[in-house]
Image (cartoon, rainbow over the protein chains, first blue to last red):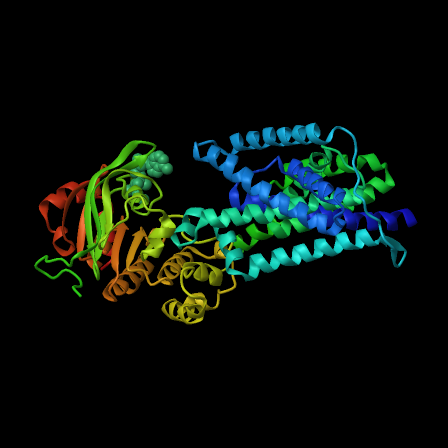
Length: 295
Length: 261
Ligand SMILES: Nc1ncnc2c1ncn2[C@@H]1O[C@H](COP(=O)(O)OP(=O)(O)O)[C@@H](O)[C@H]1O
Ligand SMILES: [Mg+2]
């Protein structure tokens, strides 16, 4: 019984990290149509950026912010310098995916060349423990959940209530139509890459803060659950990604607790395959299409 | 300000002027040497069969495909191959034939995006004004646009484009998928009245008779080229028009004429 309760606690942490990563991933695809398989490597890059700051004595939470900013800048650069030029030369969706895959490998190998193949850790303390009923969280874990909650509320507020957020959704829905309304879609796309890159970077750093050690493949190993959460929620839909993160995070931790911990990624992968087979537009798609039928 | 061409065919100074515009997809021209003028207060119709190149022409004007030759002018400004967002800043509104609303946004958000270039303080009043033109949209303000019916959808598309108070309005078959009576409402109440308020309107229509009834001037487009043009009221009676166009779509015209009374 206590194993189950503990796994729900782990599930909440997994959900928090996944939610930030999956919302970033789904925003990238939704607004810019790039299925960015380099996402995991950018997470790792941000984790190393935070590591470098941390090595210079910068506090881990400040390092996390720096890692987030690094992820934002790197993502914008990647899109401007690589994906957009390829798309402009007429490379289609599938071709771009191959470019993102190649870039992911290049980044990963680059990081390994710089930092070596060994594992690294941040200089940080897990802080005092907090008891919620029979669940116990460290201060770092509480911080991670708080950041996830704040990020989700922030993303929601932006998309639902600001002019820029609505312009982002309009660009995602139909870029030429958005342009005809006077929206500078290139600018909106840049903002989308900055924002999703920020989420990607923060997710990379807090993933490592939770795992406590990492190497150049840590981010890309985390990509499967991120994809599973994003696809489960209906790719391109931020609220779906939040829900997908909750399901993947909870199910994989609880299932791993009752079977074996190393099955976590396998379980996420199986959920991903099942969703692709039976609900390729995500679990929320049914709701949306139902509304269309009723109207 | 000169408005609307009079009965003798004197036309106002052009607000939108195309000169020998040639464009296509990927270097192959679909439309060739198209020259068209639209003045403030005019409805100018382009009619022609399916596949004539009408939508392609509008895509070239609105900067979605690159023109290979020729020019597009707005009043005094050269806007050839200008990006869509800059054209909106020049007062150009555009309703595409398909994909004319943001499906995943609500009705209110669609109208807001239509007013993207207006100051925030102007928004509530402008939404109020446009909803007064389309009262049916009022109670659907919070519905996703993707859930609207065909008629509601088109009303929203037109409402959205009116939000910006365009000086030049480009409409691609605004009555496709609409019933005969709703088509008449759209053309008479929305299109004609918007022109009468001073807007220059370029109207592409397949429903030729209904379109010509509310237009000042009309062009017949076939095979990517303008075949003839003239005052809209006279075109239907001209033997060359009847021979080229009505002969071509003879099956469709009688039913459409019957429908419009
Ligand atoms: N995206 C496209 N790529 C290539 N050819 C196209 C495209 N869209 C339309 N065409 C071709 O251009 C021609 C004119 O089409 P269109 O402008 O849509 O005609 P209309 O609007 O008068 O019915 C057609 O032969 C059509 O097949
Ligand atoms: Mg067309």
